[in-house]
Length: 148
Image (cartoon, rainbow, N blue to C red; front, side, top):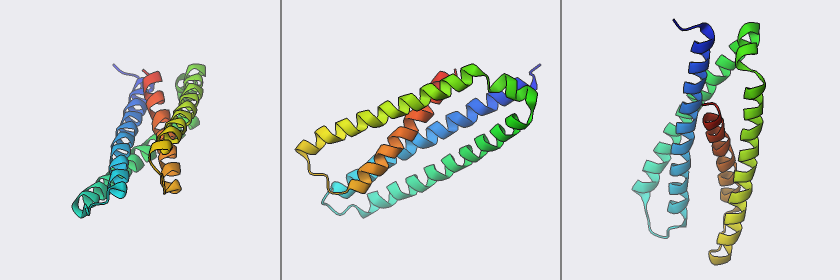
């Protein structure tokens, strides 16, 4: 028989994994979007497909983010769940996940800087948004991996 704590923990892991899957799909579609922007050929169908995938992955991420937020709110209001599911290990793993995100962003900036020596980067906003996506994706990946 499973307890309420095990059910909440299983749901939280499932929602975080779903958020990670949505983030990975979005990141690959985003790189496809970047490829479509820097390619001089007309690729209207490719850009349309990438745009649809981007929107679908955003909807998946929004669904799992909302489910995670609602679950965390229920955990915060129940003292027994809060003690069991928000202990020091979970908080430490969250801190390590933010550290991993920081180093992923730093690594991406360094790779982009080296890449910019060979190819001229015209769209700085695209680089900044991609940097944010890499950081959030690394955070989600670290949370899922550390929560095993």
